[in-house]
Length: 158
Length: 158
DNA sequence: ATCCATGCAAACCGTTTGCAAGCAA
DNA sequence: TTGCTTGCAAACGGTTTGCATGGAT
Image (cartoon, rainbow over all chains, first blue to last red; front, side, top):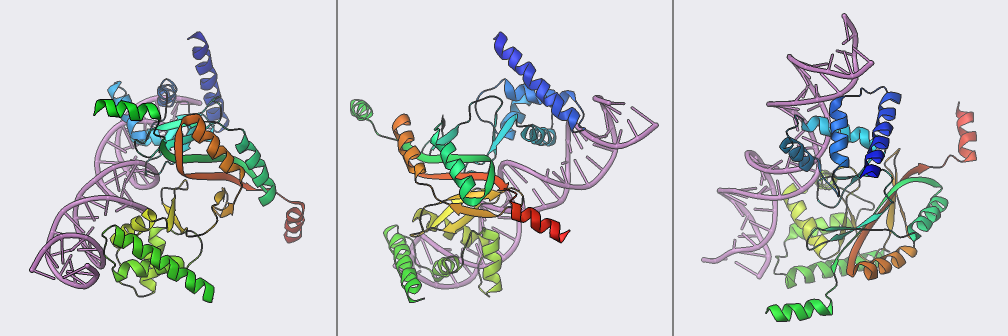
């Protein structure tokens, strides 16, 4: 608990530094939103965050959420994903191991994974195309393999 | 030319078979849209396709385009991409080598590439998570590396 | 005191839906 | 003839924008 507290102080510092160096004001709303994002796990979309903050009795507008998220994207404290549906998903990204996503087409559930070979592909592409790669998005779509235990369980239930 | 004609006949056949086996009607609009998509290269979005068909004097509605694209997605004759911007991009996908995308953040230009190691990652993820992967999306974002020739060229221009 | 940031509501825009008319089966 | 499909326009929903008020500097 103490450690995560300290980590959040670091994050606040990063945000402060970013705001300062880019001539943006350090408003309480921006820090409230940062905190709200960093005290919750998993992915989220703007509407969910908006509802959650409203439930927590914060006075906040969607416009400010979009505005602040943009700043957090700029300083890499948040990452944006466009998973199939036309609703942007976000997640906090400070010091979390880089990872990619598997999406279960049947349930929409997201699982994270990490494979070092992606780095090799990235390097190869950089050389082949003569480019510098700044970020990436890898998403696998599929479904859970039917396992023996599951089949047996289903038989029992039927 | 002859070969590509024959290929398109094959594609029409695939579409026909799909429509028939799923109880969908074989309307002239659906074939017109299929042809329009397959006689143009590169990625496209619905609006672009709509404008293009209007310019070609076709009477078509956006609703039918969305409807037909859905069918073409179902039978894998078209692939859908969600590149950052909230506007779905599509591309024809019959018999084209599976590939992934690099997007130049400065110009928005898309380059395709292919790396066999992705298949290895896919197999590893399938085993690790106990899933079956049906499709994927890998996008690298970056910019062109400044090359010596480019620098020299710029100096000449200035 | 300045003028950027906020909250609110309206505008925007890609996509979906409702409906009457059309046409494949 | 039946009822799926079409074109059109309205509705929808996530995101952006315009504007008056508020607050960081």
